[in-house]
Length: 252
Image (cartoon, rainbow, N blue to C red; front, side, top):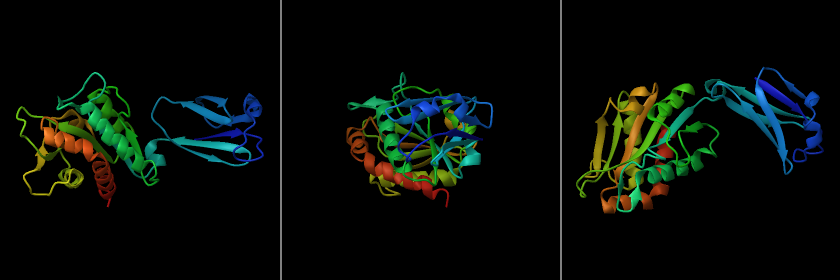
């Protein structure tokens, strides 16, 4: 579907708001609830749909075109990344750290890579401190018909000496193995070392059971271990880069 909003402009950056405000100067090729507004020389187009849509925006000297369709019809490679816990659910805590904040920081960092990579469309279950239910997390992935799903978590144990990285999976062991290798790399750990807790089969986990695409849950390390929790925090950039690369490589 394409919405064409006509404009008189002397350049692509100069918008005549009064022209946009005239309803007769808008054309729409589908029944859709939308609103056009203007602020500080910018045009804002708000589309209201009953389902998640992919969209793209192009401009000419006379029109702004907004194309929208089901995400899979718009994008070739779709990824959903989940920052574990959030909002009322703090997740694990220990050594001055809170899991929901650590997972959010990692995912926000990953986003900076994907924001500049046009080969992938990435949806996020959360990018701030709120709590999507487990059902909402996998419903999002299924609704956009994602190709990959990754949930990021931080582990915890009663023993302060518990350490290492592990990756949980249900059906897609090969994909989980790719994620696991990158998680180890991001943490600065060697495969096969005492920090490698390997792959763990967990078919009962909601986000693995509910998703209909390749999915994995990465436990980066233990928040209950003072050394490792500090390491996760200090290596957030390395973790970001490694997970970004592994998600891209999983399509090869």
